[in-house]
Amino acid sequence: MMQVKLLAASPLIFDSASEKYLFVPVGVLNIASMLKRQGLEVEVVDSKFVLNEENFDINLIVDEILKGPRVVGISLMVDGLPSIALACELAKKEDPDKIIVLGGSGPTPVAVPLMKRFESIDVVVIGEGEETVAELFPLLCKNAGVSELNKVAGIVYRDNGKVIATKPRPFISNLDSLPFPEFHLIDLKKYNRLSITTARGCSYRCRFCSTSPFWGKKTRYKSAERVVDEMQAAKNKYHIQKLDFSDDTFTQSAAHVERICSRIQKAKLDINWGCLVRVNDLSINMLKTLRTAGCTACGIGIESGSAEVLQSISKGFSVEEAHQAILDADKFFEKIKLFLMWGLPFEKSSDIFRTVTFLGKMFEMISAAEKITLKLSLASPLAQSELYREYRDHIFLDWDLYNNWGGFSGNKAPRIQMAIKEIVQEHPELFSNFYVFQQPDLEMKKKIIKPLLPR
Ligand code: B12
Ligand code: SF4
Image (tube, rainbow, N blue to C red; front, top):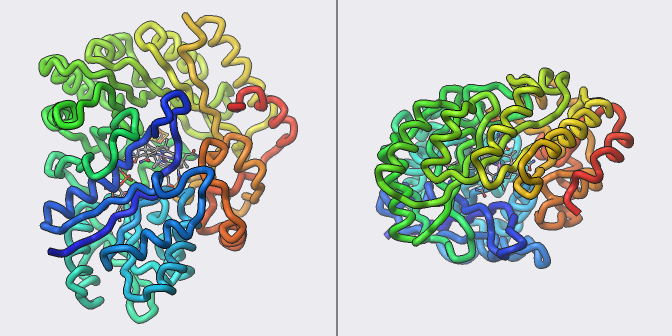
């Protein structure tokens, strides 16, 4: 039987109260299911349990690449990119016969320059991976030549030292055709909840975001039957009591929410769940529907309390609408997470001050302060975002800002080793997310936001 190994190099965020991890690596499990459907034998290694915050050593990843099947697929988001690229180089030196395929939101936007710089990477799968891997991995296992790879749409591969991108692969139009994610391939006991996706794509245009270049501007939806079947299977097979819909914005379509929620109620699922919602999607009717179907928690991207900033990032709602949405959500949910961002190229200290004032007003009016969690992130120049395209020549590297001021690493990510720091510094075009936008009033802004950051 053809064998492959998949490595989920996903982020190390865990719930300090339960000591359990928060995010299951959904993407890699989808890829695993698709490969199993093709008749391949798939092993999944969840790198969270190989690396951990205290013991972050890329040699452990190198060992994992070297152990087992010749064809290794690695799933990664942006923060894992430099360490995995380095691990691939080291592994390939030990065993030049290994075939290394990368996929996920980390390598996709920079696939061509990444492969030019790191010769150990054999293939990058661009974007949505299921249909591509179903064609690609059997070919790789059979050791097919590059003339065969050329026929596979949606990849970047290497032919005699030349890096070649094949034609783009169309998005999958019927998401119900995909197999269910193979959750049993990871140790679910180590997670405190499970994630299910119900849609792909986003029709909004927030300028800092890179979802629509990755998944498409037209949102594609799973049917309500399919979503509830996935929930039912999760309940029956894995005995889970709570889950998240990990779509970027679950509430984009009121009809989709309505269909799923009424199906959940009919199925009497009795599962607590959470989702990400958007300020201008929410109506009292929708909130009622969500709550009645078991939604007890939501995350809302507020981003800023400054009208100018909201306008400059094309967020598409006003400060007043954001305020009202939080108060409405307060009536229905037990937990509300507010996503905020700072560090934008056009943001002044007065804008941050407005965000603080906004939050102060909100806390005065909310039913219970404990309901609210704030997640303040440092704006990340993400390769496929509009803001990056406009400001790519105005970013700089500052490890203190990245690590301690709301960047992702400040939040349980592994310490960045020296060798990794060096390649990040050499290649802003590959690793732009570690950089920061040049911006006005930086020192003053730091003083204002300090109390909002986790201690
Ligand atoms: C949940 C989530 C998280 C979770 C973690 C998720 C996890 N799996 O562990 C948390 C909260 C930790 C998180 C953190 C961050 N996230 Co996030 N996250 C998401 C979200 C909302 C859903 C992820 C998901 O489950 N997707 C569904 C699955 C099916 O998709 P997938 O994992 O991408 O997998 C598909 C393909 O990528 C590919 N694929 C994946 N793995 C592999 C492996 C192989 C071998 C192959 C061939 C293919 C392949 O095929 C899969 C199926 O089609 C996405 C948005 C989205 N809709 O995807 C953003 C998203 C991925 N996140 C994003 C960002 C920016 C971040 C942060 C940098 C934010 C920050 N500044 O703090 C951090 C960085 C984390 C890191 N280490 O790099 C961006 C990525 C942009 C980019 N191109 O880099 C996205 C697209 C959101 C956005 N609006 O821009 N995130
Ligand atoms: S931030 Fe959310 S709503 Fe805005 S474009 Fe990205 S995914 Fe869509």
